[in-house]
Image (cartoon, rainbow, N blue to C red; front, side):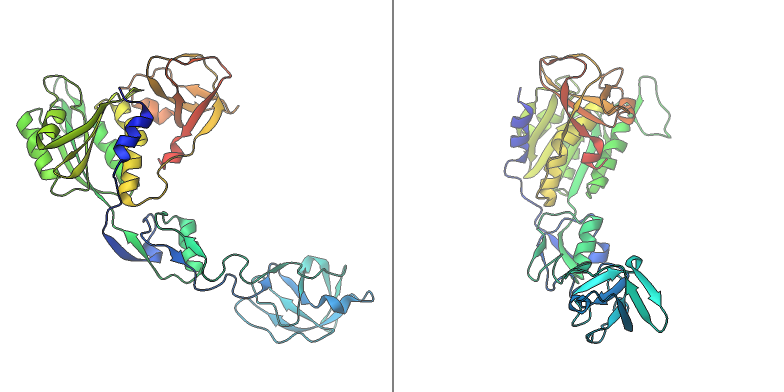
Length: 397
């Protein structure tokens, strides 16, 4: 069996972003992946401006201990004041451009208004006090967003701050999705004896939509070679990726692997990981294929560990890995021969609790948990030992 790292290398080998791109209005580009960098044509801020509501002053006027000055103008944000004459100050508001001649701002909390438009200050300022210098955030020609960056709310704001009206983005990739198993039913249907509701369909569709994919959902496919073959033939005509769940073992009703081998090839099949040993990567008529296990937890966890980076790379993302943390556990653990991703959550003490059972059929454990603990194979851990922890929030779920 392959290690997790070996499997990821195979899954991501020779995978390139979907080539189609589109020009998107920046205001409506949230969640999109940039296909070209955003380069600033301006500096931000465009002019020296005030960080505070207060008074724009000339520091040289405070020589000799002078602290009282006439206020000769008011400058609001979006307006440019007149040149500040020696011996005078300007009332100024946050974000307003500094008038010519001024070299500091005194916050209004350090000033007392007097009669006849005069103001008294508590102390002399230093040059540069409470001033945002032009270009201190962004300079002309700065690459503010790189190709492969995701348009997060902060990215949208930064792009807007330099006047970017549209951005070049990758089109969402099309993922064909289907499930095998005669026992599967949809909520609302009558559940026959021995049947189960297809929770994986809801989980995987939700995960794909959160990653910005266009989902072509073929639903449940009967447990026959012919039905599985027909599903793959349809899927490879409309997809950038084919994703399946179930039918990955070696039973008489498991047809995914033989059908993929008939239409293309399988590059890997088994991974030394728990849950989720039967994960397959291959190709069907030139379209990448990833087959996930049918057990609910196995399907969710292997999607996060293996499918997610593949989808992000196909989508054009330049960073497909998550950032793990190191936290102590509050339980003992005797690991098996495979690397394990167990469901855990942080308690108020900052240590990790594990769910009462790690059975891969217990999907409610993923609702209880707030992340996964990455446990090496054959690990013998005691309460207080440190483990690698990946919060579900790192996967954007």
